[in-house]
Image (cartoon, rainbow over all chains, first blue to last red; front, side, top):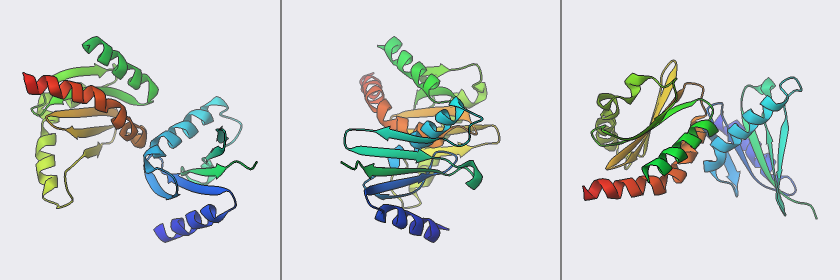
Amino acid sequence: MEKHLDRVMDEVVSRAGVFGCVFVDRQGLCLGAKGKTSTESAGLIAAIAEQAAKLEPHSGDPIIKLESDNKDCLIFRPTSTGTVTAAVYKNKIQ
Amino acid sequence: MVEEVKNNLQELLSKVSGLYGVVITDRDGVHLLKVNSDKAPEHAMRPNFISTFGLAVDQGSKLGLGKTNTLICVYSQYQVIQMNKLPLIVTFIASDTCNTGHILAIEKQLDPIVSNLALAVAES
């Protein structure tokens, strides 16, 4: 299972502009992280996804985008694949 | 100072959904600070339960993995997370579904509070 997750993370990080990703489980514990990311943010990522989902409970799974001046953080928790939350960090395209 | 710290901890309780209580004790489980909601189970905050963390830390050190920092116990309805800040112990009591990672991320926020209290304990 870890090998598979590792492969997915490698694939995500190899995409253009992506410089890191974190995968988090239902309990907010880090499953894996690649690139320039911190495993310490795992709990917060899960909390953000959980709270955002409460805003519109009947509108499907939300994708949360946190924007800063030159970086973006995308957070997604698809309910169809269980309760794994993914966060992808990207450099902003100028 | 105590009131200020209590307010900070109370704020934490409202920020983390499912978190029922935070207790800061000495190594014997004697309460220094306690902030909890009505849902917090009283028996999880008793000194005789909290002080068992000291024993767990001692046993954990035998694993050869270095100093025990955090102990997470998940029960059917609750979870108890204890942090090693010896001479102090920080105990979080939460629901079993609460975001464990979020509680672990709080550790850094608590450091200034805990170090101030540890100083006070060491002096007395």
